Length: 607
Image 1 (tube, helix red, strand yellow):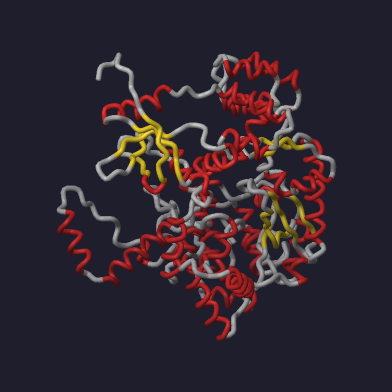
Image 2 (cartoon, rainbow, N blue to C red; image 1 turned 45 degrees about the vertical axis):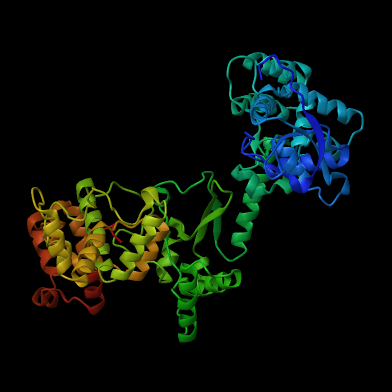
């Protein structure tokens, strides 16, 4: 056959059961939803185009052009009209192959702008969305989106057809109800390659999306009930909140209602932060102290049930009722604040980026600190009492040393609970905690050693012995085999030692929880002496400390004689007092209460 010979082919009515999709058919990717839409189109309008195929040696016909129609007809075999299918039969394989290639490559798709206008014209004639979907072989959601585009001003659709904007750009214009603004934006973006997101920002510069934390917190329904206007983006499945001033008013109102709800539960005060997080150093800046509820105790039966539920939760097989039960038991463990605690404390809260309220409870303001101390909720420090805030006698370097000592005490305490450390490691590795990670599992050391070295400071030896070995040039495989040969207890011990040395606390809530479980005691690992503290502060500070510890008035002979000493002598005498020297304590008439105070005393900021 030459290219000039006419191709003759007959159209036959072939039983559907004798038809199949030929290997010559080039269409291999099929959209099931599209097939369903095409089937409905054929059911309503009939088969408008014949199929084309090649008869095989068994008498069956392989369809080379019309594979989608054949698949649609398979869904219509409950209708007798489609039991036989008109098929144009190719005279030979070469012709069938040409048909298969030609049908797909010669088909010209309608331009989206023309298709959009056709959809709009049909809708204007009163044709239903369902009928339009059948006529075009499309899904109803597709029709709704095309009709939304059909409502755009003509210049936008003209720009789409001219290739000056993309179909996605055109869809972005559907969020605007201001035609003049839309056309002004069109002039800025045509041919410039703007993204649909940028176009939406130009069209709705003062709007926010319904994913904004304020919208989630207030509730879109409440916003609309109060007259708020919204614009729905059918293409990106987004909703724009247009009246931001109203949204802000409703947001502030709900924050106030939340404050009222908190104080109604017995808290003395409640305050909302404007931020989406708790700023670093917020408590210190406001001079807030924090008290915690007494941890609850589970009965034996509850403890057994708690373990069962926790195991199920770890395996992700806990149902909703089980989660609620576990939460109730967890609440018992965490304890509750008493009415007396709430009477001297308050709550700070904020709304995070997800629109959820995050609270920090048990915060004691400076004016309530004395009442909290008197009630036994806070410990009195040697520097508490006055409202004035004179310059601290403790230098920054000394303050840094004291912070390291406090950190060391926490590490010392957490060494007692290896399981907790391993749980923390698993938690940190499986969660994106960023800078709030409880463990400093990076190459950076977690400081815990003051510049005064070991003076009066004694940590668990596992934190200070067995430093990392220099493995440069070593046979790592041999070394690793030897390490493993020491057994699982050694491996676990090394892991616990490393994790304890890397422990740094985490965020404020997590650090407090760990402190409650491990009960760190700074005085267990550190005793103030002349080298590590007393010689590093001024003489007046030492005078005040001497009188405070021994409950002396300024004109008491023991106080005045101490004040006349040289600074080094004062530091030495305080060191002897803190060392528990029985002769000095007897000579000074130290009472049991004073001895207890001395043995528990810590500089300001170390508690």
